[in-house]
Image (tube, rainbow, N blue to C red):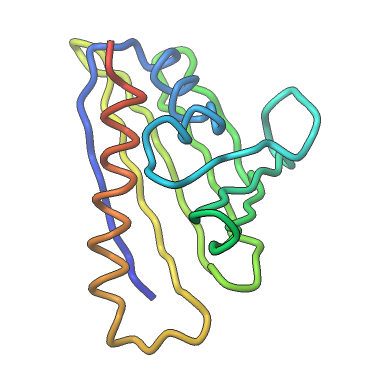
Length: 144
């Protein structure tokens, strides 16, 4: 399994930063060749499901996920969201924390990912790819 961590500081208040990083379809705007579609009814929270489809034309793969934890920031406390990957190809989880800070917020994204059938030798590549891809998404989502 490849474990990676991304941290970003933002001028956005914690509540707004949390709303942006958990706006799943907007991730499509910042992750190349990926479309994210929510597959459950609103409102967002525990039980929300969505699928990230990465590919070009007919060649690609789905990464279905379920929100397993949901605590928006409030009262000066950090917000947290936990995702469980529920597909047959991409396995693992992601945890997103949004902490209030003096001048906005701090976002921490932790993810553990494994691609079924891929030897551990490729964990370094998966880690680097995940850090780049989700770092790019966070940068775009948190842009003012």
